[in-house]
Amino acid sequence: MPPDGPEVGYGSFHQQYWLDGRIVAVGVVDILPTCVSSVYLYYHPDFASLSLGSYSALREVAFTRQLQKQSPKLCYYYLGFYIHSCPKMRYKGQYQPSDLLCPETYVFVPIERCIPSLEQTLYARFNQEPDAGDTHVLKDLGRALVLYRRTVMSYAAYAHKRKGSNDEAEVEQYAGLVGQVCAERILLYRA
Image (cartoon, rainbow, N blue to C red; front, side, top):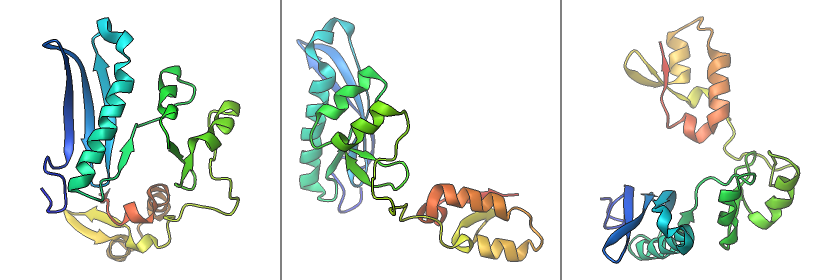
């Protein structure tokens, strides 16, 4: 466990919900350095009237607050993916405050501002600032990391070793999709 992390550590955990000596639901959560992410919940169909999804979300919010006392950076609760066209997921927008991540600028936007766009189209840019872009966009392809012949190196070093290599466009597309930060953390395998 990192010294500033929660006592339970990081990773995936199951949370069991019991009623009268009977297990009625199981929730799966991921505990990460800055958040608790609700992954999945399954429950016994005989107890559907208890709104166990809503109950488990409230318990997970309380759990997040408890963990934040041990690890102040752990301050967010994620309900996972939100698919507006899926009625079973609409409950996620009822919890406030609730934000959705703009798929183009990677900035969180209040869900109230996103819903009108989602009512019109399946894909929408939520950040309405026309000049806003991804702040992590690729700036230096040479700093992307590659794994070549069991050796980690920058793409610049790899390209120098492999004079005449014709994969720059492919690596540039990859690094452009994952962004500068991830390109400098993830190893791209090169044969």
